[in-house]
Length: 271
Image (cartoon, rainbow, N blue to C red; front, side, top):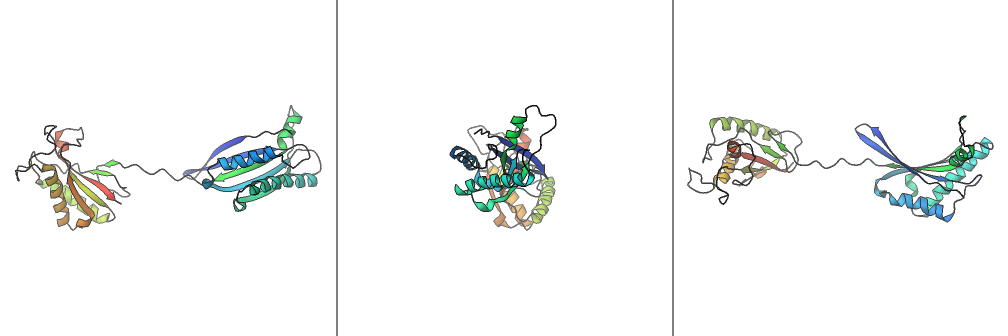
């Protein structure tokens, strides 16, 4: 018995995501609809080699070559389809995912076929069409932004580019206060966001990760900058339970210049 097995993977656009379909074909001898053990094992192995959790449905279509009467060919093609169905369900494939078992009858030959015998042998077949559930979109990676916005995710970093400090100071400038007013309004709008306020500094030696706050005379400048923003947001009715604060010293420079490293960032912890 001649047996030709092939696998065709088609990716068809459907809205914004693709519908995946795999077709497996089993070929039969003339006027036969039985399978030998090897063929049965092959078709079952094909199904089980797939990620079965992703299989949505299986459709089975039987065909015949162009010889014989229509009624007989419909019956034969249907018997071939049922043979494959019985083989799959007999080997543990769930019957409920097999949504179609249909004999399509004969396939007519094209007029310009060179090898009639080969063409007919390929038409004596059953196609097992496996339809897959859509692949879920990949989980988005955290990003780096310069403003609060809708649909932030945990890990996103919001660089408050206009919340800068004078050298050695943790006090807000008048310009920084105006910018934080805008931030507070956005935080009132996006009430689902929790975040860590991160303070940063520049220009200290590598062996000194933190700098001295000239107002307190203590080596806690980055923490104080974060705490200053925390207190300001609390004064603007942002719930303290949504926020934490921490100083990171000089450990996370942006590489854009020292004035940008005297900064505060918000890192989303819950969205």
